[in-house]
Image (cartoon, rainbow, N blue to C red):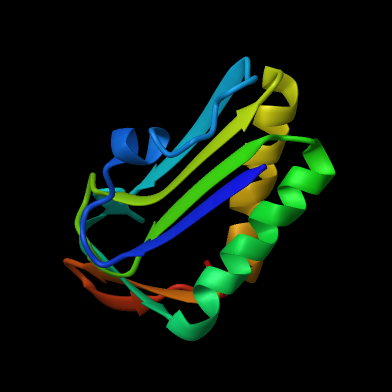
Length: 139
């Protein structure tokens, strides 16, 4: 069972991250990539600004990755999240899950992004054409 966690201030290379999945014995790699939308509430989004409790973020992501391995029986989890400024159409978060079968891979990947949004000490501000808005909650 392998876990790789990355916190990035620059672009996320999803293919490079995919290469970090330990796929030996796997029949499935399920991936999720979240990107910045260019429109929100009818207004153009210039960027998202992600602030994080950097001293805790990696530990929280590692913990939920480890939990997903136990809970779903997957073999490998790679998670990466941007901090700082992220422009429209740029990658914010990337999750790759290696598993023996697709069903546990899909379940684990869905659970991981939901838990990341609940638990990760990340805060998001939208910079739009009509102003700046902190989004409620974590993730």
